[in-house]
Picture 1 (tube, rainbow, N blue to C red):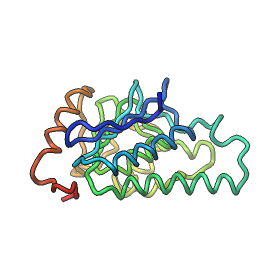
Picture 2: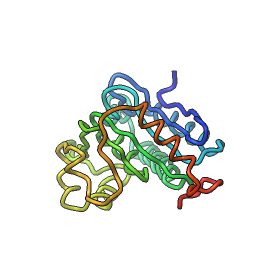
Picture 3: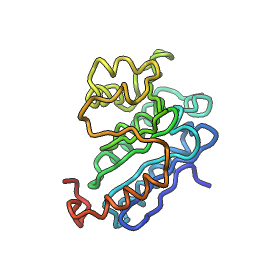
Picture 4: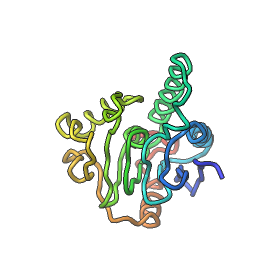
Length: 203
């Protein structure tokens, strides 16, 4: 089974990350995510939910398979492909909601930050752990996080923070008890509301 899949449920599209045991990102996952975006663009949906199976939304990149043996040229090409993917996601003309449970680290946080709204379970924790290997966030996450929750809180996420402490008041995000079925039902109803245009444009 592909590590990322897309399904349409009426007006709602759902991208599901499913790469057990902890949803580490790697080249096959990124390729599957790009294919899921192809399906999103071809579908007649008015809202998109990005979610993940398992206990954690995503625990970063599998460095043992993704970066080993890369030279500078190949590494630059890979990062450019990653930037193109998340920029493409950010540019979708529909509202995107990200549902996060457990840990959301590094690459997973980069994906979540490209969504319009993050809905986190009450035990979710977020961190940009790149500093521990002497690296910057590869896909612009440091800047997006500062924009989303303010520079003071953003600087604290090198260590894992619960979402209720990370989020900026009034930012339009929520902390909910974990219940994926309830979330999907609510979003399905939300995607049918009249204030989302027939073309799916964000209002």
